[in-house]
Length: 419
Image 1 (cartoon, helix red, strand yellow):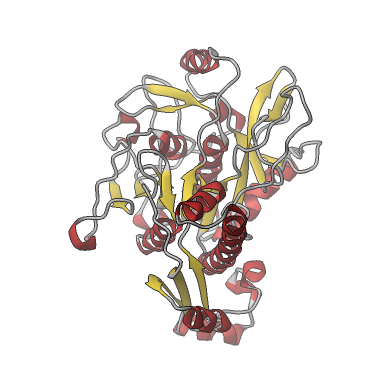
Image 2: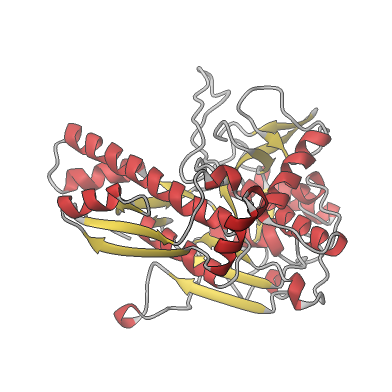
């Protein structure tokens, strides 16, 4: 999908109603004074997102308003699966999963708790996947009773909703199957196969490209459909921002400077958007990125968590692989995530049927999303209520209490046993 450069086109976010300062650190209603809680329950804050044309004066006015934020349209891209050094590793992983009856990540995260598919409606835990779409006909998804689908890349005539989220690339199908896929040919691939409501937003085209406009709109739509857990494996495509500007006749130095401004503006925009979603008790989980290089014969090239995973309030997830002594962070995985989870040679659903193994932080992210669904259901059963804050704290406590902190700095808390 080509995104032509338009210097006057912006995403504008507006929050009407009361929002407490520092909401990303407060998050829960329990952290607020009783009178504030009562006021916000009576008139909850409202989120409005739109794409529009702004002059420089209008943009400055928006940025001066504490209720608003503006960011230029920028390209975004799939956190693409990482290539494995061993060409036979994927085939070996598939054979091992078939022999064991499960993808190795299922056992690693100790996904023993099961969500009953016959639970009452009040225990429904809708999960949203923002990705390349999904193959709904795959037998891995036979347990889904309620589908909400929307294509944000190719809308219908005159902008009408398009429910077709067909997945050509296969990435979204694989990720979704790791969250809530049913067993396929006797192999368990899903962490939380009891999930029955799937919210699928196609925000990346068949080449894995998209835009911040599609992602922001999809987040708002998914929340409107009731999503409690939202999983994303995508990032800001900074090189594409520069190339887009150069194609519009910007000199390279100026293009890089302008791209940095666009990047900074979008960080602020997504910070405010995620603040609102966190306060609304939605749990956002995102892949940390596959840009690092370790053990390649030269100095390690360690790259920090990419945006929007690095946004405060998002659970960023790095990838773990297996070693002779247990588990280690994958050579490609970015540093300084919140959590780490299985992400190398993960067996999941393949477009058109069957199974396939993939590697990347994109494969680690849905393990955590599936665990979040398990924790959410467990809390509803045992306590009667829960929140996104409680689930996030439970995930972190799971890592800490079982001594899963990895030795080297920046690798995050590992959602996998120490080995």
